[in-house]
Picture: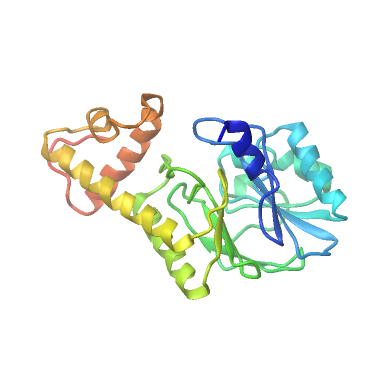
Length: 275
């Protein structure tokens, strides 16, 4: 499948209550682009937008147009986390729609309301439940749409590959977030994960098991690198991520630092390690 074919399969995908409008910002870290999700009960006159994406006028106008074509008005804009490929377009979309922007990080809110784990948003005729999933960033949340049996995962789970732990993230928090989503998958019979980048994922238990296994394996590889004498991310990355495109190694260094912090919290770091 070509890149254009992959993008065309993502744009417009979703469920009976959620539709993806793909932003035109493909890249190494954004995959096919940012998935902006429009969420509403069928027949609703209002819609919630999750992750408006970059500050791209053509994309934001298209989001408004897709909503209008369905007879819907944007009443809430929600951010899964602060990264600009998800959040930069929020102020302009708020101007276009007069909708508030809800976010965990107060710096990214517009309006009087924040976004707190446990909140239930029902402005579009269906419940959207806020789940605390920090780790990729400290302010990351996921959003559960029980009516469709799906979770919008932002960058906590991607449609392809695995997520990076950002500088303000935490591997310990991330592992706990993955475990929380895995438990939710069992308890509610989740049907799919709707990520912030890449295609819809139809088997949540398998995807989350893969993520948890992958993280455990990476930790073991870092432990092996430390046992071999490596003492900083610059030494560890070429060994552990040898099969990864070197252009991605700067991002891998962020994850290695998170892994070293985690091992330090567990009392597993040998003397002389810096990160």
